[in-house]
Length: 291
Image (cartoon, rainbow, N blue to C red; front, side, top):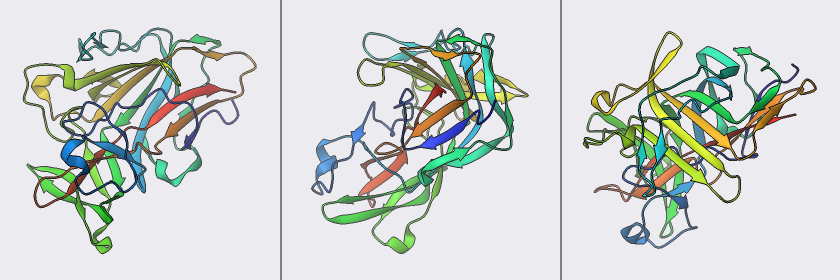
């Protein structure tokens, strides 16, 4: 299957938005251009385009049934999960046991190398999935009140976090480990399971439903992380169901996966003294398109 998979940054379909929220924020929008210095006094987090956005991809594929059927959100928007990942009807299209590190901020097309490309059987697939590492390499800056704030890393409460500095010489990439969809690199101290998973339905634009759970892996078996062992995750398992299924025919020559990070890859939110703003992981948006 020639040119089976390409990862394309910055263009394409969007079904995987908002799985990685800024700490303490339920959702976020694109950051405004150079707002006043008091912007975050009355606003939550927002998203910017990163200068570095590195993610490690282990596997992608298509499914006949929802591998995260027991993960859902209620009418109030809260997400619940039964911690089950069911891959029994899933077919991988790309596998790399060592993981492939891709910098989505570089733009252009990047062929997924070093792994195995697998042609799925002809058919209609209502669901797709992706397995990635829960560690993201990030770098971003934001102008607030006429001052540019550059990301750098510090250790806070035993975790590496992105904070701000006004000196460009200190502008550095940092690795953020996502262990909780609400707190980011910290565990939410609630006796509830919704922060170990996310689910959202999009009814405008590129429509469909996304779900994701934090996970651990043993061999090739992925197990969802529970609230009781928060902090132990090494992976994220994401499932997305576009409104229109992905159709593979005998004449299909390839499968392209598009990742979008423009105005979403890094989140910015009000900082704690002495940091005016802080930075966190923002979403990327992959989708599948046969050609």
